[in-house]
Image (cartoon, one colour):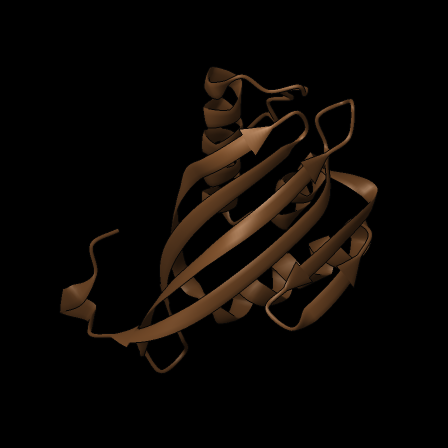
Amino acid sequence: MSILIIKPPFTFETAAAKVQTAEDAWNTRDPEKVCLAYTIDTEWRNRTEFINGRDEVKAFLYRKWKQELDYKLKKELWGFRENRMAVRFEYEWHDAENNWFRSYGNELWEFDVEGLMRKRYASINDLVISESARYL
């Protein structure tokens, strides 16, 4: 997987491509590659966790995908302007006991001039589902 760098300001087409690129990257579940889309000093809020810097992002992603097994994500562009985007998403995963979940959320993204994400604020809710209720 190569990181497709799309720089702001965004048009509808480039914003949609940026969201698709992020979806594709996260679905690899490869923290070493995914973290390259973020600035060295990126700032995140993920649920109630505050993450600062690319190294913390990488550690977070390793932890996440060790717990959220068979993770599959879908993202959708909600809105954009200049160097910011709003994205809605859902993903499905199961834990080590094979309990399935669908997680829903919204993200606010801010990019630097090179197209790397410098801020990511995510609000996420989890829904317990049966394995037969999966659709991703």
